[in-house]
Amino acid sequence: MANDHPLFIYRYMDRATPRGDSPRFRIRVRAALPEQHDIPSKVWVALREQAGIDVPTGQWGAYWEHFFKEAAMEEVLTSITVTYRVLTAFGGRFAEEYRLAIARALADEHMGFRIDAKGVIHYAVDEVFEGMRGATLAVLNAPVLAVARGAYEAAFGYLDRHPADTKAAVRSMFEALEVVARQLNPDARNLHANLCRVSLRDQYLAASAGDAVEKRVLAGLFEGMAHWVQSMHEYRHGQVDNIAPPTEEFAVYVLSSGSAYLRLIGVLALRVGVQPVA
Image (cartoon, rainbow, N blue to C red; front, side, top):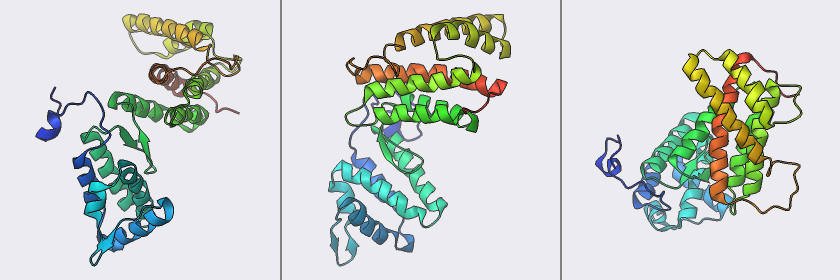
């Protein structure tokens, strides 16, 4: 199926499954490496020192073309973070331009990885999942929601491990929601179904500018959140810990669905002006 990319090779690319490798991605990583300020030689040294990666050299310097074409993908991805670190010494502009070039290449080539704001490469589930994560982090970026953001980022960090710590991931997702819910309701001891279907619902409807139809739909969404919370109590912190870790498929669903609810009450928290977590 076509998308709106201006280049033909990307417009009609099969995006059913993220890629683990791509010749074009390797070429683009090489093209993104700046040549000025003797940067390639500094990257060469840093790769040896920080990752034990030895790029072959010859009379005219390092064989970068050969490295990016033939090296294991784990070494290519590692080189990206090392390069980003080297570039930070030359100012934020160099590092950020490089990071954005890599991010575009990862997206265009539909790679199964993402690059974060610090130049670190992570596994990615899919574009929709990453878009959802980014939209939620944008809400949680407010300082008053810093504790919830920490729990939310931890959830993805656990999922990003190999093997993934799925139990910790879903627990941290629940914790992020609970933090914001308690900021909105300081007298509540924990997040439970009735808090969703009554208190949070009424708080949101009171602050909503939507019409009667939108408010009826919103009331139903909070009822759905109540069922989500009730079900997730099986995995929350403090429960008996002898249950098996959930599957990655389940964890991805929990983080996706939980993110939608977290954005909903996160926006409410900012709208009504909650207090930071003590």
